[in-house]
Image (cartoon, rainbow, N blue to C red; front, side, top):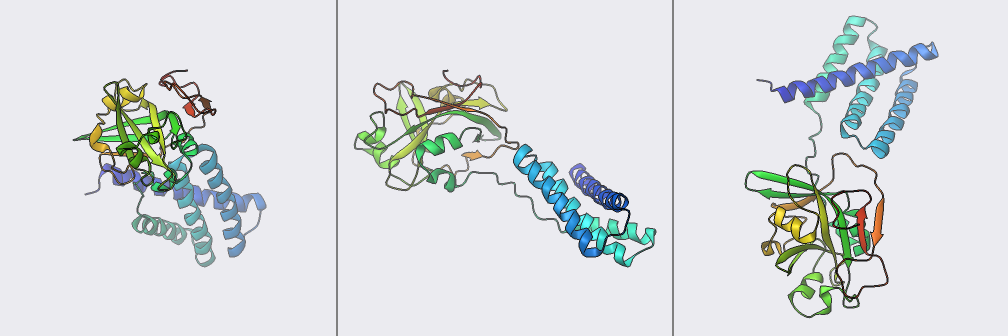
Amino acid sequence: MFSLTTFKEIGKYLLAAILGVLFYFCFEKIFNRDFSLYEGILFIFIIYMILFFFFQYIYKIKEIKELIFKSIIISELTFILKQYYSNTFYLIIGILFIVFLVYLFKPTKNYNKKINKYLFLSDAEIVAKDLLGKILVRKLKNKILKAKIVETEAYYDENDPASRARQNGDLRETMLDKEGTILVYGVHNNWLINFVTNEKGKAEAVLLRALEPLNFKGKTNGPGLLTKALKINKNFHKKNICDNNELWIEEPDIKKIFKVENTFRIGVKKDLPRELRFYIKGNKFISKK
């Protein structure tokens, strides 16, 4: 039996087919002549690639990108079919057959939106900025909690007066570990979560300061509050955020443009002469303006 999801998928392919064929006949009508096979394929491909990159880099809308991709295939195959089938009935049958084949042999969707280790291989300041807008995901039994990262801070080695790497011990050793390693330590009876950045042995990390809850209610406008809301504790210490099944970071479905503000770090007695706290401007979930 076909599920509702299957019918929706088939509907998307049919819509792509209709768009592809409409574009084909529109181009023929506008230029008032038949395209050769190679002219048609090249012209349609150029037009659709312009649209594809426009939506990919301006709007980041996944569904439209998929629709454009399917339409490209169907438009080009329509040109090929028309070279051999002048009868309209057989042309329509051929197009529907192509739609069926494209659906049947469609590439498997990549549902894995998890951030990989390469994001954490940069300098802590760069990673702190790059993490803004990403989605922190926490799996709790049958629940999946999601929250957008809206505020971060970068920390460095023993030359950073506010860094945990200044003192010998477990926290320094953890900061020297490989990229993506989770660093959890306690401050005023609260757990704070950090991610180790850059190459192994450089002692850099990014602190999560605030999150915006997406599918749950809770106070997350502070480093201690967000760990309580997501039930993050010392058990995550020294695990890696890139291969963890209970806590991970994802790309958002739709990437929105936002402005990043920076200030000096909060709650440190002595700071570096650099502004290493970063947050999304105008977001109401940040810990402090």
